Image (cartoon, rainbow, N blue to C red; front, side, top):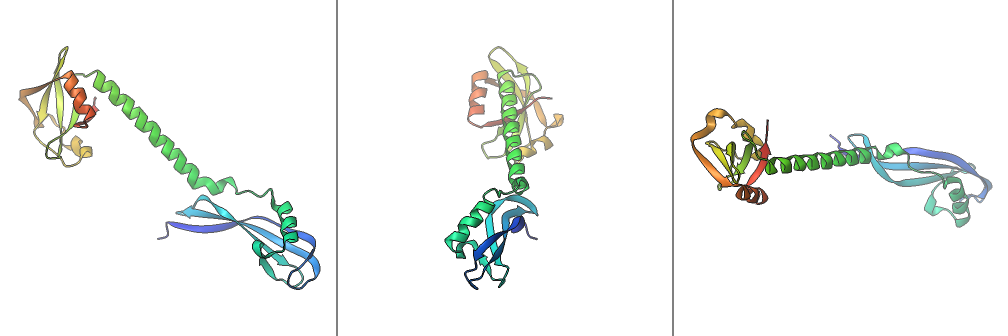
Length: 202
């Protein structure tokens, strides 16, 4: 399956009168076509890749690329094509990518702001995702909050990926017989050290 490729589209056609063909030397008209090249991903135009100017003598039908023309014809052609620009739809993929990047940035900032609010105001029932010494992940639940300390019940199970902690976050997996306490400043330190990787609140 082709995910990435290059295509072209006609941007403008026209002609130049009273020019001398470099090949047949006839004083004639030359027709031109401006092709816009663009990259595509899954057939969605991603971004422009420049333009190609093709010129044909109407007398001998010799075809030229822009760089093959004498300077006088180049100048006349430039006057005819100076307003040619890549259409906005050539940037579709780039626009979509920019919008997705902006959305991801917004969601990231929103998530970070929410996490900042949760860590500064701990509540009973909050679930903290923690990184164990063996690099596995588990959870601990706030059972009690005092002026300077937070008391947690620890989850007996672990998972290898942080995004899978929801699969073990069940009441029967927590050990309520022994609560583990941390000073609030220590909890903030663990968050800064990425030992606590996330906080959830229902």
